[in-house]
Amino acid sequence: MILTEYSIKNNINNLKVNKANRQNLNRVSYPDDRFVLSFNGYQEALVYAKKSKFKNKLLNKKLCNLNFEEYEGIQRGLKTFEGLSLKQIAFALTDLHSINLITGCKNHCLHCYANAQPFIKQYPFEDLVQICNDIKELKNRLGVSPTYHHSLSYTDCSFDSDALDCHLFDKNGNKHDFVEIAKLMKENLGAAPVFDTNGWKRKDKEKQKIAEEYVEKLLKDNNYKNFYQINISINPFRPEYVRVLKSGYSLDELYQPIRKVGDDFEQEEALLSDDYKKYRDLYTDYVKDVANTLITFKPLLKTKKLQTIIRALDNNIEEMKGFRINDFRETLKHIMQELYLRSFCGLLNKKDLKEFQKILSKYNTRIFIASGRMENFYKHKNPNGFKNIKRIDPEKKLAESNYKRIKTNKKLSAAFMRYLKMISADGRLYLYDNYSIIPTDIKLNLSTKEIKFPFKIPIKDFVITEDMIDLI
Ligand code: SF4
Image 1: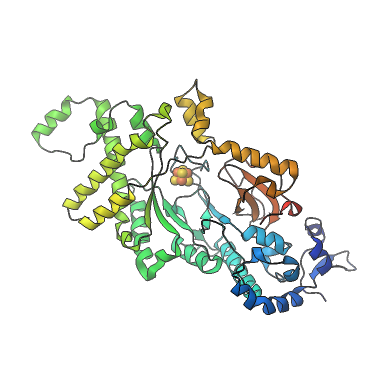
Image 2: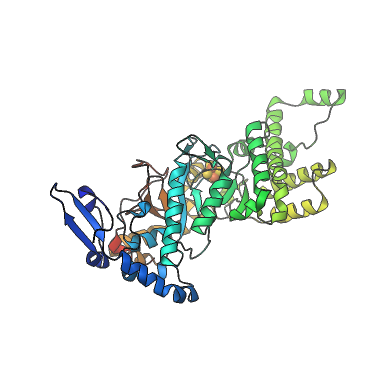
């Protein structure tokens, strides 16, 4: 019973066939030396899935909870999963952190865990549609969700991009924006992406327009519900902020909320040094830019989805003065002051101010030492005390020992933790734990065949194979 043309000769060697597969697969020889693999289990798996549907629903089962042997073959004909066993599919779709169809970011943050580079690349929209359709069809056949998250239930479409750059093009050149992408992902994957922007400069009129259009679209038809969260990142690691701190002027001294006009002002201004004026403008612009981003997104306050991600170093990292949360509070105060000023012009009401006050009081001091960027920054500031960098991120050591245990024991469960998964635009599956990117031999079938450097941080040299997957 030939059910699907799965692979021709050279793909067969790459296909990992587990015990269940071996029973279900036929290797059929053709006179022209071509081989076709077929799943005998397709019909049986469909019947079994139908029979078990009610029980699985009652027990709230997902693909990762099923006995794969009983369902093997059910994936027949789904292009995305060609050549993969059900166990590999379940593994890829459990704790799926991102499908990286957009890469690159121009924000240059010094703490960037992804080492994002300013070359933005978008991969074909059709690939996302194909993945989503195939997951939907797999769900129909199985009667349970193929995707599942053990903790935070979001799946992004990028690992290293700003939300304002998150769009894709199809082969006809039509643009599909983040709102459309999120709808597609939420409806088919069951997990929504995060809209995360680091803001823009007020003079960047193009970005301002994009942001305003997004706010409008997010509110329309409750599109914001297709996002897990809408975040505005605020931190002291933007290059212009680092330059301000380097100047040595105090932030209070630099912040000038209102520019006076008239002769008196001209005289005062003439007495100031060019150096001071340069940093005053740089810092005041930074504060006003952040306030402007917040105000642009203000209409989304009522959705309760709008949050800020305020990230700075812990206060005990004395050697990084200026970049610790208590130091950064000065800037948060200035941003709030800026919002109050705008309220006098009617741009915000009391309720908005209260909401902003609330979301600006939450912060996070977790900084990942993962990409080399923070390491370089720290080294630059502490040329003689580099080893103290460990204090910034004590968990990095744990990640290294987890990885070593996997390598030694050749099984994933030796790490005593679950990894997140990432799919690069060429379909390869990687494991991720905020530090390490570990390759697997799982490859989804997408239109982009091979990407040489899918990440701007190093990929480990040890490949996780199907027989090492003992924890999904
Ligand atoms: S931290 Fe985010 S916004 Fe900053 S450079 Fe990296 S990807 Fe871009």
